Length: 100
Image (cartoon, rainbow, N blue to C red):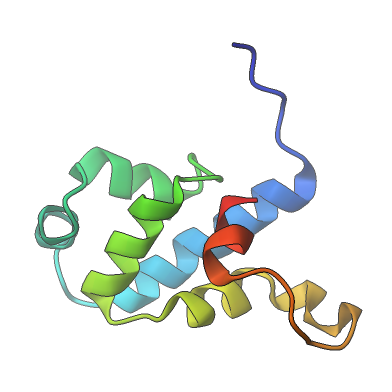
């Protein structure tokens, strides 16, 4: 299967996600965080560096849980520039938004 190139918006969102996770991790080691979340340290390193801009939802959910971040917090942070696009309402769930 051929994967289409990421859009600039997807790349930027991945960079914001990585920055959020780095801040959330604080002084905690990458190895400890990755193992507690059930992901490889290399996966966490790639997400934090923005090299994996669209990680799988269960991966982000596991890391966010270990860091004490709600998925709503994650979603709000990674979509910050687009927050003013329109009123909030009964839109997609956090899981659906992160998967898109």
